[in-house]
Structures are given as C-alpha cells and as structure tokens.
Image (cartoon, rainbow, N blue to C red; front, side, top):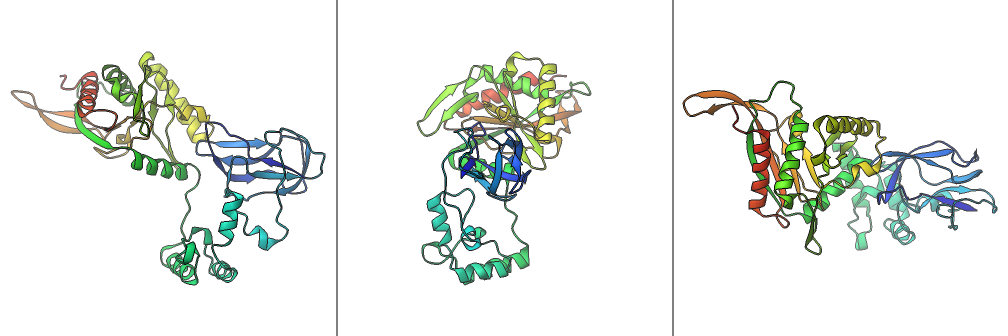
Length: 373
C-alpha cells in the first residue's frame, strides 16, 4: 500500500482542516484530479491526487484537522507510484472500529498512544452515551485521566449552556496568534484626534490613512520594523508593507499592500479592493497575507472611538482608526463644529520608545491635515 500525505501548502502553514472529500473509498482517480478541499488559516485549497490509482481508505472526515506530512489517502496495490514528496512510506492501519477511535488526525504516533490512555473504555462509552466530545475535556484524574465526574460535568454544561463550538480554520489561527502576541509583546497605546473638517465629501479615508502611515514611517522608521524578541534585535524596513485588517464571517484576514510609500492612492485602492474580493471568495494566495511591516485597523467603519489594537510579532506597531464624530472646536475667537477622526497607535515598547511613537503619531496627524481650516 502507498499513502498520499498532506503536502506542504506553503507559507509555513502547518495544518489544514478537511472541508469536503470529492472522492470516496473504491473510486479510481487520475493524476491532478481534485480529491479533497481543505481550509488553512489563510485560504481554501483544492488538493489534487499525485497519481493514478484506486482509493483504499480516506483518513479523516470533514471538520478534522490534519498536519503537513500526515496521511490523507491510502491507494490500493504495491505498484502505485507518484511524487516521492507526498506518496511515501507506510503506516499501520487500524484493523477494527475500536482501534480507529484512538486515531486522532493531527497527532503524532506517541501522542495518539497518550490520547488512547486518557480515558477508560467505560468512560469513553459514557461520553458517547451523553453526547460529550471527550477530546474537549481536561482530565482531573491522575496524569490527566478523564473521569466519570469530568464527563458528567461536561454533560451538565452542555445541557445548561449548549455544546461548545470548536474554533476552526481562520478563527482558530487568529486565537493562537492573539494569544502568542499577548504573551510576547509589551504594548503601549497612544490616543489622539485628527481634525478632518477640511476634507471634501467622498474622501477615501482608508487611502488617506495609508499614505499618512507611509509618511510617518519615513519620518520615524522605528515603528516600521521587524523585532526579534528572543534575541532582542530589530531590522528597520526601507519599504512600508501595510497590513489592512478585513473582517469576514470566517474571521479576521490581513491582506498586505506592498510598498505603499511609492504608490498612488488610486493604485492602492484598486489593490485593496482586489484583495478584499479575494479574501471574501477565499481565493487570496497565502503570500498576499504575509510580510506586513505595520498594520492598519479601520474599525471606525463599524463602531468605536478608540481601541488598543494588538501588535502581532514581528511587527512593532498597529494603527487604529475610530468612528468619525462631530465636536465643537475652539478657533481662537469662535467655536465651530468640526469632524474629528480618532486615532490609536499601539506599539511594542521593547522595540520603540514613547518619544518615537509620539513622533510617529504626530507625523500622521500633520499629514492628514489636523487643525486645517
């Protein structure tokens, strides 16, 4: 038997979630025929067969997570041939249903052995009867063993609060990224307002912000940098690659506008519109979600005045733009109602000083034309 393993999907993505099988056991497939659709943290990818052959077994069901290098398909016969990078080796197959229950997609063989010992057969049977996902329980017994009390407590919570919904795909990766950022970054946030009363109607606010950020990065490059917190070094970046947060039903995506300091607003707008469309269609290449040197979150298009947006390493800073409001402004001899744009700049205080961050924000304010009449 030969096994087709999940290939490297690029951009260092270590895992994918099975969305849909396009074949079933016993089917004959041709080379490059799409056999499964998977969802990574970046996109939906259709995975083709590396060879002609007949499918003996499919590993995993829709919703299962599988890591790069783990088996997807078993082909019949000993003469199967194909890409040595994906169709390699052999592994022991489960011989009955009780053994297959212990096979966990996304776990190493040693981990699978540990998982199978986390609960006794009686406790597993109880969990199945009470419709409790045993994989979602932390065991309170010795060495993490799941007990009857653990299962019954989970069943009560399911009854009272509803069954838990595991995070998948983009949302799962977002949760991991936010937790890692919280653990690694020393964040400080500055707040201020920009007087944009002089802006004409129909101004493209996101593009004005993008170009202002490019100017601020040129003036204060410490915030356009890549910081290595482990070795305490930084790399100041000559080009500004701006990540722009895009909210979707699947979760948060941050496509990257390249070299914004050397592009016009029309070019940037066309590029952002294209990437947003690709994000919502889940066709954006993973490479277009990588390499940001600083990020913009224009959450004011929805709601909210100020925020403390999260810096994701190795970036050093993120700019937040809040909801525009009208407030009275004292002009020396009279008061006028002006439109104000709230700004929030969060920066990693390990990599930049407060003075550098303040000068960066001041450059944005000046570029946007604060206090202009």
